Length: 322
Image (cartoon, rainbow, N blue to C red):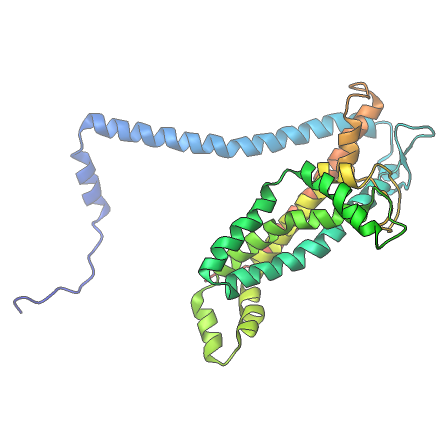
C-alpha cells in the first residue's frame, strides 16, 4: 500500500559490507585509525598493569625483608605468642597482642558503620526524594574526604573527653574512641556502595511486590536488600579492609600499648600503628628490629588478602543477574 510505513526492524549490515566500506577509506586515514587504536589499547593495558606490578613489588619486598625475621623467629611462635616486645628487653615476638588490638578496633568500627551505613543506603535508595538524595549524599561523601589524621585528633580531643564524662575508667588513649570514630569514617563507603547496589535492582521487582500488597518497608527489606545482597556484602568487606588497614587514626587515638585484652577502655596498639611508630627512623635499616616491620606487614597483607578473597567468593555466591 502506498504511504504505508515499514515497521520491519532494520537489519545490521553484514561484516563483509562494513569491510568494503572501510576499504574505501583514505589509506593515510586508515593507517592513522589503526595506529590510534593500537596506542589506546597499549595505554589502557599499561594502566592495568601498574596495579598488578605494584602489588607484586610490595609482596616481593615483604617476603624479602620478612625472611630475615622468620629466619631467626619461628613462625608458630610469631603467630601464637601473647607478648610483643621486639625492641624492649626481654624481647618477645608474639604478634597476637597487635592482632587483638587491630580486631577490637575493627569490631567497634563495624558495629557503628555497618548498620548505620546500610540504613542510610536504604533511606537514600527507597525513601528519599531525588532532591533530598542530591543534598545528603554529597554531605556523606565529604566524610570520606577528611584526612585520617583529623579523625585521629577528633577522637583524642573531643570523643575521648566526652566518653570520660560517662566512663570513669576510660584512659586517654583507648580502643573505644578510636573504633567509634573509625566507624564514622567508613560510613560513607558502606552507604555509597550499598546504595549503588540497591539502585541497580530492577524497578519491576519493586512494582511486583507493591502489586502484591507489600509495604515500602517490606519491599526494602524483603525484596531490594536480598536482591542487592552481593553488592552490600562487598561494601562491608571493603569497609572492614579499610578499617583494618587504617594507620593515622589508631596511631593517634588508640595508643601504643600492645596487650592481649578485650577491654575497649584500655590502650592498645594495632598492627598498622606499630609499623608507623617503629619506622620513624629509630631502628637501623637492615637490623632485626627493622625487619619486624615487614613481618607484621606481611601478616597484615595476608589478612586483607583473605578478606578480599572471602568477599569475592561471597559476591559470586550471592550475585543475582537481571
